[in-house]
Image (cartoon, rainbow, N blue to C red):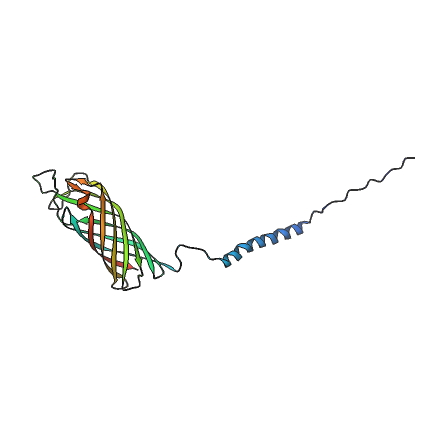
Amino acid sequence: MKHILPISRKRKLFTIPGKRTLLTLITLTLFALAALPQQDAVAQQTQTLFQGDVSHGGFGGPVIRFGSVDGSGAVWVGGRGGWIINFSNQHSISLGGGGYGLATEHRLPQPFDPDRKELAAIGYGGFEMEYTNRTYRLVHMTASTLIGAGGITIRDENLEIDDREADPFFVIEPGVHAELNVTSFFRVAGGLSYRFTSGIDYGGFRDSDFSGPNALITFKFGAF
């Protein structure tokens, strides 16, 4: 008579947790992950290029420049303005632009029409950036740079511009200034700059005729 051996059932090596257990584990894991960035944010502060409170303002106003053109005295008139970013009361920068035109009369060395009194009509402008140190002081120092372009053509004594196409040129003009706080909304600055031009070749004028030092006065009105 044959003996029938009982078939033994294999034991499970692990048990699958229930749905409630899985939800509990997932919830605890999410809470733990969310807490890690918060703890790190408390321990460390965000690093920035400039520390301290930052405030904003703006200004605009006329500018007068005194220099030379082809060896004779020259006056340039124009204006500039910008957006001011104050990093506490120690430092500030302004980002903006300006434009200037030649106000004095300068005849072309090599006129296109010798029978006419041909005068230089020239202007330039561009992006201007200025750094100001310790703006809270009555008198403080600033440093600026203009990078832009201009054009030169002909005009007559009645300020009528000739039909000829203007000759373009590149210009860069750094400068330093001493600035006086007159009121809370008005400042006056006197300074020195040096204008570098490239590309002028018109009616006998060259870059050397317009490149050189300038003295300037700037009037600023705005919220500083």
